[in-house]
Image (cartoon, protein in one colour):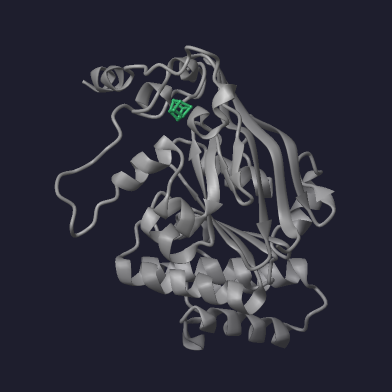
Length: 341
Ligand code: SF4
């Protein structure tokens, strides 16, 4: 296995609110190698986007982080804003969900690119900047004739491709893509996924792909990390996790996928917990069909099932980790259903 280009260890992110501290990311660890795509999945509100933003140092005001995000010999957590700004763009890219909110409606597409290159690669000639910009846009299927158009003159799918081109024009080593295809139709979605695949092939870019769409992960990702209540509960090769999910939450998520052959909707009873006051023990226990007594009081640690497959569940650890008598079933599913009603 190649050396990771990004290494996250025990990353925590929390927000102060009037009600208390929201633990949005709770001791998350993973590695990302060059040319690899890691899919980060989970229900809304489980901390995926906060984790992505925490990695590139784009947390909103009021958020705090600790832990380690090792990149290029530096810990990005706590790095001065000016140093982080220098890294974002040329080294670390981020693609957001809503391109229209990120593109300045008063600036031509050309000016977005030139501004980016003038800031980070001032040594390039203007002609070289234009050539590089148009080449990157061309790779996204945007013809050079559209270079001087304004954002509102493009469709939603084209704007998203422009955002991706902007994130890539500086050839970053790592790109965090936060729901890059949400709200796009399936044809544009397929185009964008194809572009991301080309990207890692051509430039060896490492991608962290945040999505709630497991179909995208199956198609585009080498590995998958499943997040619940701010924690990574399972992480491993995408194919293996899909074929033999080890964590009950992963299993339930996979059962909820709707396909042409789906008969009757499957869903996980209950809702993700309030991250100000998550349940004691395993945070998934009120919704888990396999919960045991131990789960209600003791948070499981992540165990290695195989060299590249980690699971945070009492069922996956050596049996002697569960205290005697604590492996009796807990009838939690009915509580989750009652909460819902
Ligand atoms: Fe379910 Fe217990 Fe595993 Fe949590 S630790 S996922 S409650 S079996």
